[in-house]
Length: 76
Image (spheres, rainbow, N blue to C red):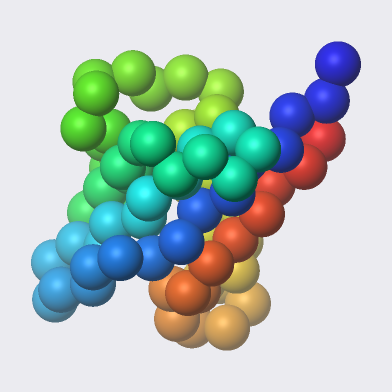
């Protein structure tokens, strides 16, 4: 079974970036990425496949463009 995770950037500071995200366009979770270490965390404490897939997609876009994208979609 496939999975679609959608995220949109809501806050970016000098130290971190936050994305609201969820499955099937339900933005019911928040992912935080530390800009120095790339350590990720979620507000609900669940580091599951959806959070990991979204973080990996954000990192790939950042490596290509040098900026954190305003939004990303991961589909498998």
